[in-house]
Length: 321
Image (cartoon, rainbow, N blue to C red; front, side, top):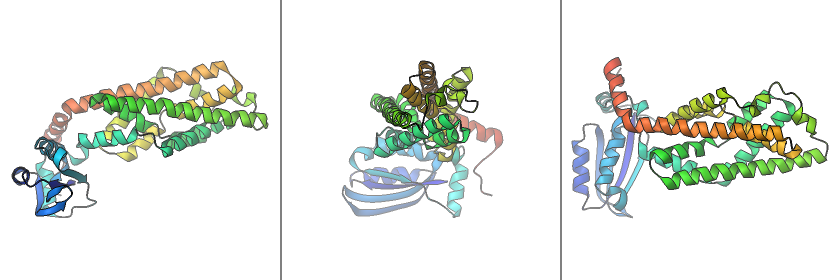
């Protein structure tokens, strides 16, 4: 797996950038078009690099000043069916699917902490679905609400902000989590009050025994353990860009279902369920942030050594077939 780099380089930096890329053992398809860049003015340089080495190469380019004075765009090709790509992947230490590009992690985390309209709409819909799941005692709707909920992007952003030493990112992430859940719970509580007035929902629908959904406001040690595991899995998926794995994280923790139960409990003022839902919500979010931070910190510290050791232990994982 290769990463394509498109660089706009000021003319005075071109010799150093060119030398760096020409001498790099994991770079191929190096192209230089002098004077092709108009804004910023300079040269256009493009190359392909083994994903395992993309992060370190990017750090060197930034040290040269290209991050401030030029432009760096990284993309992942959908296919690289040529022999040089296979040789580069075999030469680079570790496996491309284990490679971490921390600049990409930071970019994705920053994006996940932005309070967009769509984020709030998705969360309101998810909390509403969870509330209906409580009323109907439907485990299927609980899972659906978990999948729709977008909150893990903000949780992962908070963990990444701590590890990358970005207080602004941590603050924006936590603020988004708090304000978005407050907004979604308030909206669904108002809708639940309206449903209660019209007879669509009764207090007994919330307070009666619910064998399929009662667990979402009964936090215990297992709830926190699941949150820890889910946070670690989600952080790993963020770091190595395995977005499909995120779905498993979404359906493993009960943040959104607890928020839905809280909205209904507020509407009928059931204090026991209010407290239980708040405890469940806090335990899940807190557990995910703690484990996500610990895993990203470990990856930041020793991930290259771990992947290199795995290659020595199991043999080359990127050798051509």
